[in-house]
Length: 167
Image 1 (cartoon, rainbow, N blue to C red):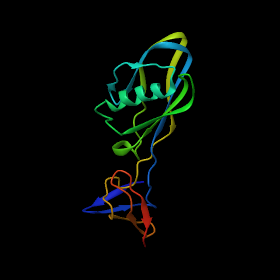
Image 2 (cartoon, helix red, strand yellow; image 1 turned 120 degrees about the horizontal axis):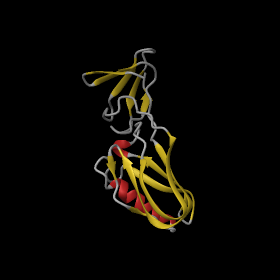
Image 3 (cartoon, helix red, strand yellow; image 1 turned 180 degrees about the vertical axis):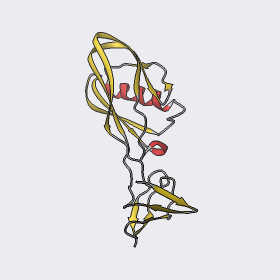
Image 4 (spheres, rainbow, N blue to C red; image 1 turned 90 degrees about the horizontal axis):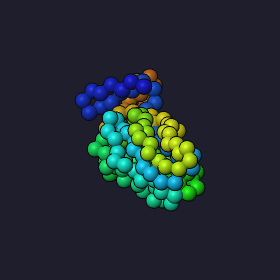
């Protein structure tokens, strides 16, 4: 939905969208027993991420590596165990903060140096991000739906607007 900016006021065609945080899933398959892998995002590549059979350790390793990238940063992703047993299965990566409520690039597996029996690492987008209407509008700013004439006010934040109809 196009958004037109006019000074401090925003206009859109149709009701504004609150946006959706993108969720991507890393699947580790085969039977890894050790080793490392690297992930890429927007042209940057993580340092080696050490595989662990302890789910929480593996998730923490991935989270720390992604948040060390300058184009992600601290608290911009939430990494969690999906369906995992002993370091094999799925890990979800949810974009938040400055990367929340956006359609972001897909994380890539840049290097798979896992050891074991046919270990694999693959990324998929499980919930595509949807960019919020007038993302960047401050709390209290308004959007007018030019199709219906209704006005909405941002009851959220600049990075995660929550549009409430007021007229």
